[in-house]
Image 1 (cartoon, each protein chain N blue to C red):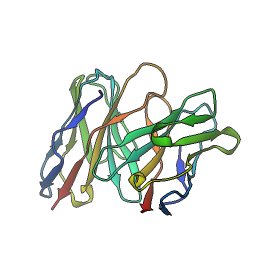
Image 2 (image 1 turned 180 degrees about the vertical axis):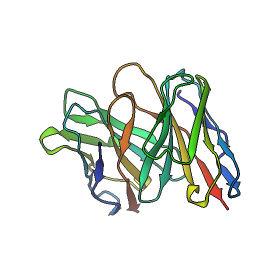
Image 3 (image 1 turned 135 degrees about the vertical axis):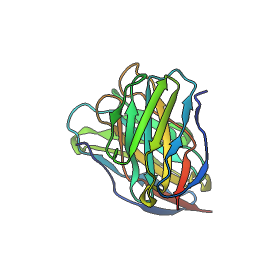
Image 4 (image 1 turned 30 degrees about the vertical axis):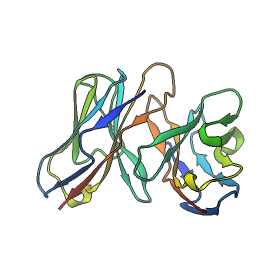
Length: 112
Length: 114
């Protein structure tokens, strides 16, 4: 079965610090990869997605992620975080048909 | 804009009750999903449906059932609620067209079983 591993459960950063959240998946075939974000009290929103082509994908709010097939990784990055980026971040992999397998999430707290 | 609406934000029920959670989407999506979200466990798929009257078990279907009588509506049923079903329940939908279509989520229903 497909699995997704997010390395950090909690991350605390100061504003303007750089962010990298790790995500690794287990499936060796063709994958579609996603990062979702859940701001406090809000529904999950799509940050970015990778289907094919350029392995560096850009999403909303200055986020980007790099797909490295040889490492089965899809890490999320942002050069300079803001207080408003405080949220929970989920990595997800399309595991066949239309279902997604989610990681356990990383809670990011950005202090002003 | 995409809209997935869950009937209740908060719900409190008693052990042994039959509980219905309703979800409606307005995007004419073929696929609909029910997840539960628990701290430290992420999202776990309970059931999904790719067409009216069709359903497939997800990773944790025990104690749950679903109903999809109309394309826009997907109901999650707790046949006999238990305290370990206290959780946040999320509904999502996606288009069947193309591979890896993103899922769109509702606001969630926080269910407490007493």
